[in-house]
Image (tube, rainbow, N blue to C red; front, side, top):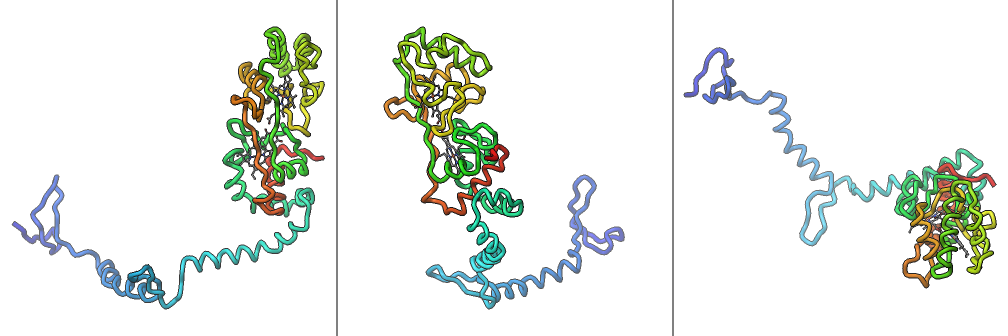
Length: 291
Ligand code: HEC
Ligand code: HEC
């Protein structure tokens, strides 16, 4: 039975009790009731001022303020564009190297291209240029095509695709074994003489490795041939990994097992200014070479 007693401070007791806690019929606080009663007024005001009522056919009431989310977005964009305009104008007239040598402009270039890098470069090279499986690291100082600002800009503009021929069937088992030993040792600063002969083309296979990798096996930026002596591998530094590259090549159309390595050209998809900024972004990941 519901009852009233002093301890309830006048509130009716519902008679419900759980673990010694009784449920009373108190009104919510006054301030809360006032707010509650004002809510419909707030709603009506909102309905009048803002687009709210949907009509059949997809349109809606416009609201007295004429506000739209798209309008707000465009206004924000215009504000950003007007802040950026003087920088954009300046950057358009500068070379990538000049941008690099001007800390304020370099900062601006990096900040304003971050999103583009994230949208189109990061999926292969990682958001911080840390590289990915079979995609080169851009944040170190090991370069296939060179790390001066001009070379980086050229890479991004024209694209790249290293060609390493497939050498399957070229070597006798002996030559191949020696060559693999040479490649293994070269990574650790040692020279395995019989293998060096194979590399230099002095055996029957007449391999033309130095044409692209150089006589010192340190690679050549002009063809993007990897440095074979630095223990940094484009693909896989294990014996099997190196052997796979040797036997099937890179981008060798005639070999179905060839490794694929194509850096797309961005000339027709990005503006000059965007490419300059990207080159600065890549350079400043940390591995850029002062030319
Ligand atoms: C579809 C994947 C892909 C995308 C997207 C991509 N790249 Fe590459 N990038 C590569 C590959 C693969 C290579 C290595 C090419 C080779 O081995 O010959 C490369 C090489 C490079 C190099 C040369 C590295 C060196 O060691 O010389 C730079 C610089 C570079 N990319 C920058 C960029 C930038 C900046 C973007 C965005 C505009 C970008 N890449 C987008 C795949 C990609
Ligand atoms: C026509 C030029 C050319 C010739 C000839 C050539 N290479 Fe290459 N090689 C390349 C290029 C370019 C790359 C890098 C491909 C890439 O990453 O895009 C490469 C990559 C490699 C790699 C992988 C390196 C890594 O970092 O993963 C090895 C190993 C290699 N070459 C060994 C050889 C050997 C051994 C010979 C001779 C039997 C040879 N190459 C002949 C152009 C050549």
